[in-house]
Image (cartoon, rainbow, N blue to C red; front, side):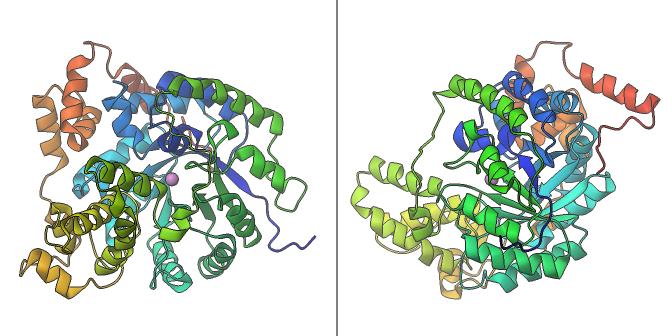
Length: 475
Ligand code: CO
């Protein structure tokens, strides 16, 4: 056996966050989550991703559940596992930038309620959009995992990501995540990328690949040989397709090698059996497409974007323009300085490409988001934008070059006041309200009086009365 960089590999189980976000429209209920959590806690995972991303919104919007109560319940059910969440930098778990004071409050509550590690990323890899979230997370005593949005372009080469990783380390990252949301990272480039990042930063590297293009398991094996420390996987019942590789498959592949995870297949099997039953509850939302979609590699865009195109073109009876629309995406991306395609840039680039094709003239109509993008409101594009196109879209309008959040004047106190005026009763409520005001208002109206925040008050008393109460496995 050829062995390079022998080391024990850890698994992060994404079943309770990304797996159901990717396959089941983020609909898994807290009740179902709590069936799985105690079983997952026995496995000995390096960590579990259980909160953040779209779950915060969906939980309240579709399930009428409080995401903060969910987090506390998961923490209680998983006392032995490091819990991680996904945060979109200055966007928190919403869809625009928020002020530093709002961000600080959010992170404080997330850590207080049991999050041990926050994965922080930005769609454009603009580190200014990560700075505050990183320093705030450190201040609250949780681990910072800096995520790099992976994409392919003339500027996104190994050197680009190594430079980015070194910067993130210098900003205080405790570990680096290579976040391959579209499943574009191929096995051999992954080997090169991980080797270089490990060598230049000395930090632990965690791999987050989606299985969409069929590459992720192979990519993981080559990453492990290059020194990757932790692999994001989901139990088989909710793995593959647009989700992550399977925990069981990865554990079996590494068993008996110098990269052995040491995890017990029987315990993983128990989680998987329960997850298999639970998945049946979501048949209505289940978008599993067992096929591997290699078009993702051909067009270098996430699978969701391609199916979006198809349904939108069908609606306007112009499915014959599909090929033209797909070919327009890389051109729009080039005009915009090669943004990685992930929320929200995938939507911004996608709708503009469609618009260009449907109107028959490029940028004849530009969406508001594209105007904002060219004004610098999402941050600095990875490469310079096409100046001619910029002028066509926003004319002589000013382009901001500072950190976008510097323009936001609202504070968490404003959010508190507005939330209270709309039925909010606590700081947690204000954090629901600030990101999703309409949804939160309805949620506040629907909940019965007196039941909110009992658990929160208990936790506060418990922590205050016993200084060394710690839910954090600090290994
Ligand atoms: Co993901």
